[in-house]
Image 1: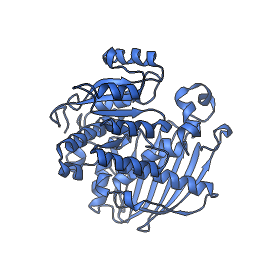
Image 2: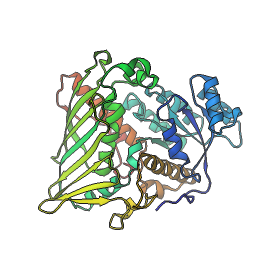
Image 3: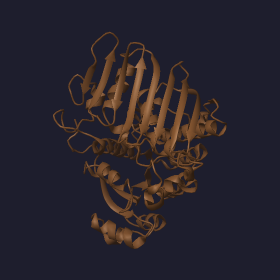
Image 4: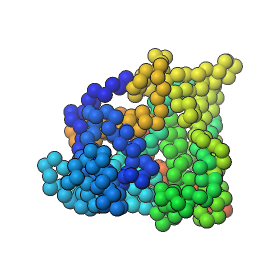
Length: 404
């Protein structure tokens, strides 16, 4: 169980690019990083494209006015001059800026924690992965839902064979908040998401379902996709060529099949984020709206509901427990869990502790690469008229299952 005691020798000096007053995700990053005040200390930021607004915001969250910078270039240069300068930076900016900021941060000698999807192309990820290895730095990806510890329970049960051979994978991440185009016109955080120059080659596939795809890989690290078919639509015509709804069919190398539905026009839906894994003996199902419960359905037996934090769960699951079974946990605890693991990974990298890095389960740059590659294959299939395509992978940068 986690109680805030230090897991590393001292808090890491941390800064942010983006994540300011008008951003949707900045507060989630700060909740995650600062929940355990023994892991990170927020000391600097380039929080906003508007320097005055960014400085005002930074001061209001406790950052020294002198360390609220007008842009990331200035921040990296000035912090490098300080004995107490930044060690790690989080990138909470629109997709199209991730690559250049991440590259600049690594050249400045910083570890990086970046929003998803990581970059536009897998070639960019492969390049940055090589640069991170050259510089001896960690690049983590904020798949914010993946710190829900019952996902680790699912992983353990799959690994132990408790559901048998996996046959069917059902994934869904939908909501209805973009069922009209109102937000596309007035909401700054939504406008860029439907602009391909800033968002990249996809909308909901990258913005929503890369979360769910990574979570499925976290649960089933041995499952590799052989081929897929993607059918995507732009029900709000002005969003084309970016999709606001998509279906993806997947065939895995072991013979299992998968289906994913992602949508931002699921009218009336508040939270359609679910994962169901069907095996030859039993099935597991987790729903983001009930993150403290895991359905375990054994063929021929009563349905069981496994509850977070209980002693019958796997040790790997309960290691991330924070509040006890009597109290509900959710997204803020999930972000806290992955940020704590980022801190442990960075500390291990700084100390040359490869054993910790080899066994730590967190969303690293390999996970980011797999997410970008999955989007590329989905877009390739859709652009070929929703054709089945072989899942293309780069063997040089292939995933290592233990890091998923």
